[in-house]
Image 1: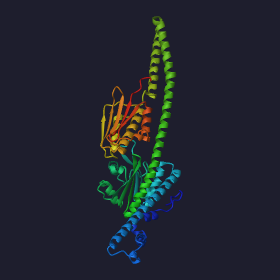
Image 2: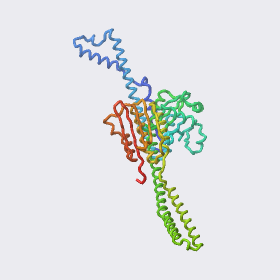
Image 3: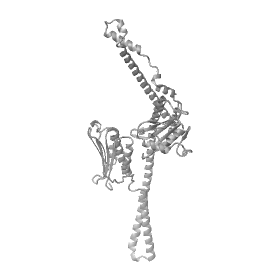
Image 4: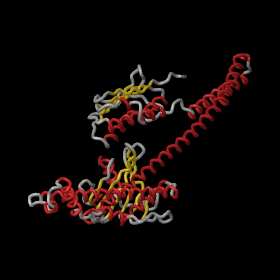
Length: 479
């Protein structure tokens, strides 16, 4: 397994296939003599007075039972050998995928270049017809094809030929997004699988695809996308090897993709902060220099009007009135510019939509019914909305994954006495007393609440469920 231009990777495919081969082809030592010898020795220990002829040969009555026992032991040994070889093969593939990922991180710092080489290697190793990477969009409402290998060529958005790709993007996107088991586990389709859309089946026939293997890019409770590999006809052994390989590659690719997305978010946030700081600086300068200067000029002109009154010559009075109007107009323009550069509050999206979408996404990865009850909710500042949504997502993830609940309810209201109240409740097993104050999720929710000055309460009891309650009151004006 050698990557051109990168450090060498030891050959793997023949070894992997040999390790994954049916154990019937493996050489399993004949243990019949060893078992019989041990049985005979045990006979000597227990019955020292018996003659050697009785010790060396079981009676006719016990021979069938002894043969069955030996056959069972041999089968158990074969099963254990097969399981050990599968584990060795999986570990070997994972080690190679990790090594390849490390090599590519050094030589391909760009995320697109990393995935291009990773998927190219996957297609080469499996002799596949096509491979695509599908990613969820930012609000997790759909997935789109992001990168594809077809006919030994790489395609990316904006590149020549991208729009002419024959891959059935819309049909496959809908299948990936709506097929719930595929969000958390690898799915293997045959070319005419009834679960596949007709457009995908036609593509499989045209490209002579026999198997479509879909591995999710999963990190914790979040699915980032999918790797889809299309290959020709293979044996059951090689298919198992392909699944192990694509899962190992997906695991490494998920970590790299997550780190890249986090880095992109940090860069965007840094740029946003720089822009906001510059806008605020300009707003301060306009307010402190221009607006206050126009205000002072206006006051002086109006004072001159009052002092002169009717005694002012008509032409002077007219010019003074024009100057007052100009000063007032420019003062209004300056204040308007300040307001445009530094709005009183940067508003986020409608939190009602965000909570409903959060529940819809969670339903794709759990069978637990999720009920959403929402009152009329206000529009929050971006920072407040982000922390509220983060707490809601963490509480919902915990309930869906760990509570063993039969029902989850999300409620949000805006009572006058509190300002805003969010509740995520389940009827699961509750949180053990020694774990209530531990765990990253609990700490993360509390830190988010602290950042916006909200109170966070977790009510739980064994076999009585858990309720996470967030209460937030907007700060007083000028506070």
